[in-house]
Length: 72
Picture 1 (spheres, one colour):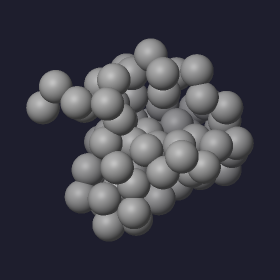
Picture 2: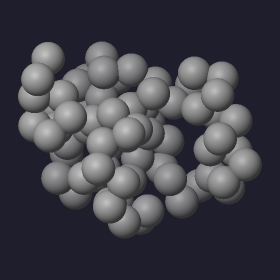
Picture 3: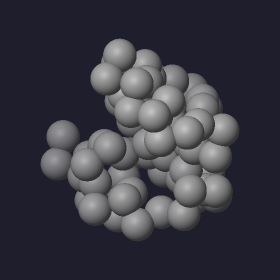
Picture 4: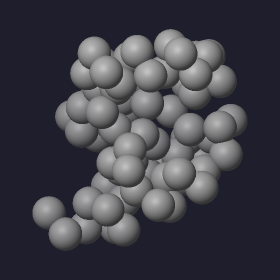
């Protein structure tokens, strides 16, 4: 898990491009979702964390977002 506030914009872009970040989560709500999710984009940076995979998010105790991942 990587906290958003620990990354610069350039580092974040680089980690996403390399595939090290594929999922974003809300630390307070314990929800994870796609990087393109509209509700995830509205999240405050201090609450946002990143994961490499759904498995990593689930192992950290997070559940899927109903907006973007509820269709799966």
